[in-house]
Image 1 (cartoon, rainbow over the protein chains, first blue to last red):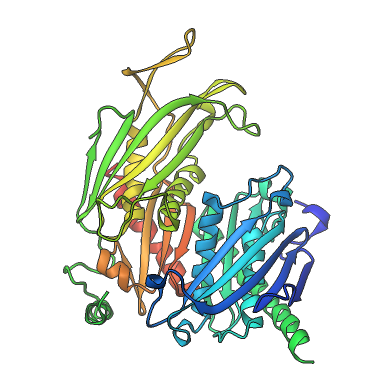
Image 2: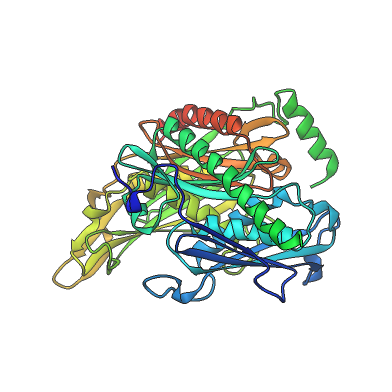
Length: 226
Length: 258
């Protein structure tokens, strides 16, 4: 079975990365998988309001994911939805293991991510952008988090599904991975697949994450090695 | 959560035991009460130890989504009511409640448990809308597994109310003998990681101690249909594979109870 644009099973779409795209933010980055583009901006570590929310032993991490109204074919309503709330939570859970939160007690690190164009893989693009933005903000981290999704079309695995392919796929499995300690920090799935296939797809994702991780490093180096 | 409890639980799990004497891969006593709510089209109450959850299924009629004109609609909501736990608050659902509802929803939806095409009354105009509402009565950890089990049991037992096409009204008092088109029994099993150990069915203290969790929803044929990782730590591929194994095994046992 042929994929759109003759991509192979383990090919991802053209990746675009840029660090430092929001001058006001403490750190920021843009990440794109083909037509999917996400911008992330980090503010903090800064004071927590309301104050009772602060923790004396570590920083809070607050990731807010949103899709802008013109990012999709049909306009999507602005403001938080149930979907965006859940994605914000899983992104927070995926990035928290990478940050030395204990170094910033009584503070909050806010990460705002806007998907400005959506063509599948928005949560993974958002995560990649956020991970780079955190590093750009100079927050001490155990390593970068890289993320990508894969599925299965017909009998073939397919990495980084684009919008039209996603409808044909038997499943969608996004993964976030930290190459520095070989830990998976985000794992979701919807679909219907035997255990063996799920494990294979997770491993396919991990290999791709290692490549994305290299690109993220290079983009950060390009900005800071001047 | 105090430090001593945390250390105690971590030490015990590294020795393969737990505070309530269970093995690491052992569930608490599962109690399922079918149809506790007569007014609902379907309902079930599940107790996992002290965790107590009621799920009610209500049916209504509405217009289908434009991209799926011949399919009924499934909606899942969850309420972490302050009645159930001192730290739950009133107000609109927050991230935890939304995640709970969406993970339960994903398990049912992706397993194809409901044949939504059979819920169509008039293509593009009228379909059955199925609302699955999760209400927590008492919280002692592992809400996802309890709510998921209650939701599937409630859907499995639900009966359609009488619908009069001429007057376009539903008579909820007169339930038909017609079941909902439910085909399979997806079961969610949540595995938590404490230190280097994997545990099932955490109670509240274990859940507060955990590094992270992975919910694995399996179908009758052993296939996976939904995954959700949560918590602020990572998992290795080996740990994930072990979690799949545990979930398939325990899922099979729990499925027999529905």
